[in-house]
Amino acid sequence: MKRRLRAILAAVALPLMIVGTFLVARPADAASLTRVTGFGNNPTNLNMYIYVPDRVAARPALLVLVHYCTGSASAIFNGNGRDYVTAADRYGYIIVLPEATRSEKCFDVSTPAALRRDGGGDSTGIMSMVSYARQRYNVDPNRIVVSGFSSGAMMTNVLAAQYPDVFSAGAAFSGVPAGCFATDNGSLWNSQCSGGNLIKSAQQWGDQARAMYPGYTGRYPRMQLWHGTTDTTLAYPNFGEEIKQWTNLHGLSQTPSFTDYPQPSWTRTRYGDTGTRATVEGISISGVGHQLPLNGQIAYAISFLGLDETTPSSSPSPGTTPSPSATPTPGGGSGTIRGVASGRCLDVPNASTSDGTQVQLYDCHGRSNQVWSSTSSGEIRVYGSKCLDAAGSGNGARIQIYSCWGGDNQKWRVESDGTIRGVQSGLCLDAVGAGTGNGTQLQLYSCHGGNNQKWTWNR
Figure (spheres, rainbow, N blue to C red):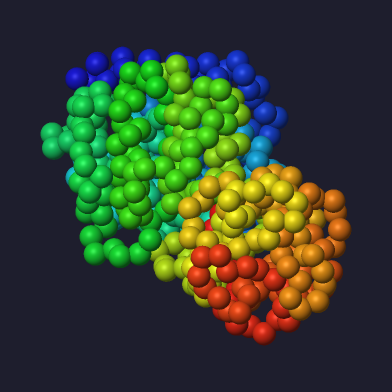
């Protein structure tokens, strides 16, 4: 079994090592990847490495980046995870890189100890590393995220299931559902799972994850899942099983709310919230095997994980129920804008693209006429080129869409109390007559603090 495992893992690692060796030169600042010892409870003798950029954000995010079988912290740091490092230099977040020390250099996502919160497996040691980083740096508790490749992707799923109160999001490249690799004979390899032959219902997968943290009733992390359709190492059916698990954990339908094709060979599906930071997102790569991430893919993961922010998150901490007055953050990302009073979304009627179409409230469905993006100049855009526009500056001025042209009547301030105020008028985005039903129109009105003037941005 061990010889077979080593042969399989060597095949897995080969394309990853090629990426690290030939596509990315070893950086001059490799010494900045620092080994940490004595970081806390470490029952399986993992190594801990940390990367702290020269300019750390005042309230930095924390990324746990987990390597593949036969890999190492330095291999993923200098190789196919390098885009995460470059982004850390730009956005000031911290990276913790666990390193497996057993002979195959795989992470344990199989044994009973590994599949139980604080059970004494690899995940226990990784969480000690997270605690170490949190104690020494002013980490934003709302932006602790995890990503990994192959064995690291499997660990990403396990960590997110076991510690949903710690992690806000995960991005798994070529993994399997949490618990799929479970064994009862001490082996770390499960051929039935790797071959894509473990098929369960969404409820069964969800229950398997919930069993890793019994009694937990809070929310689970957002999850981004990547897989190649010709993967024969961790076979492609595992991708669909992962989607079943994470949609179930979020109480969502397995029917996508949104589907698009960011590149010709990619099919992206989103579930729940449909913006850049969807609740669950799956990206299927046609004709590609066990060699993810490919060039350019980590940029999508960075945006999904929220690592491309430099300001603290105003989102509720993981594991808590979002406040109805959670504040949208301008200047990046996209998603639906939901009225606090109505629970309905800002909507362009009939998906019209005509200038002057008045905006309304409507049941949230997340299609393109309800997906809004904010810009650094204060615009709120739909369809990419139409702006949320005030057709006047006094009480009752209609709110419409109009081709973006840079006027102050198309610029907005998102306030800490949940209101959205026009820059030109100083008045608030308001549901006419405090209406809450489908078709209620939007206007400008003097700010009074009512819930018909408060909004949440579900990115």
